[in-house]
Image (cartoon, rainbow, N blue to C red; front, side):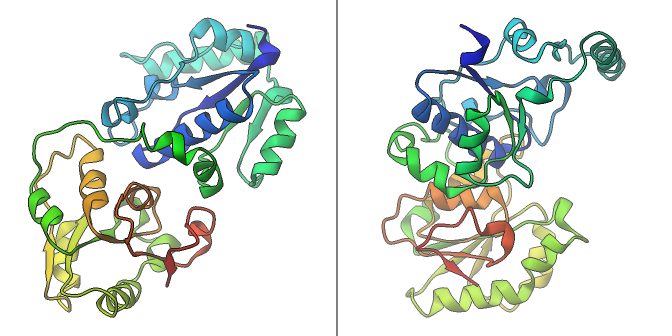
Length: 298
């Protein structure tokens, strides 16, 4: 394969971001059938964000062509990350030093989505010869373009029955995602204040009979202390925290979703197969490109 006919998608970040990156990978395969599209997973050799690379474990129907070290060198003209064991940080520093000394950068082939959003911008970049396309690709436009194909691929793996799974399936369930963690103390936290959740719950009550709200959070204690104003709620705890897909799976089973400004619960809403679902999202800039037109912003 000539390197001019290669496109590379570096995968980075946690589970929700990995799905967006896979969607972009599939979008490239559909729109550029004359090019070989590779997924570069080398980031997960050196780093283990959250639970590492979980995409194919959660969705076993996914098949991706991974960039080999040999192909990486041919495209990037620099030594790739190939080692993630003891002393990996020192080894990576040596690798960077060798690349800087003997190979240098190849800015002519790199495109970074940051501050370069938009499908047309990506098309122009590829037309200009960019081959390594870095970003999170959190744009519903990519998803909508390949949605029909993805509906048969993004099916969760079989798993042991999870806590509250039966109740969620049987009742008028509404998922509520409260993300804390790395959001605490940032503007992202202010975008999903208690006021947002109160308005979102009110919106559901006005349209749904006898809803039960299932809370998913990385800090369930915070939910316990700060959502006393809502009586009919269940705080979901106890599912395997080493599998990031469990909570997303349960949220996708709920009849309706109140999501956070997060790729994780956004994907739970995308994968919710209830044709009559109501999805409420925080109407902030971060969500502008990820939301669906039929969702309700607050």
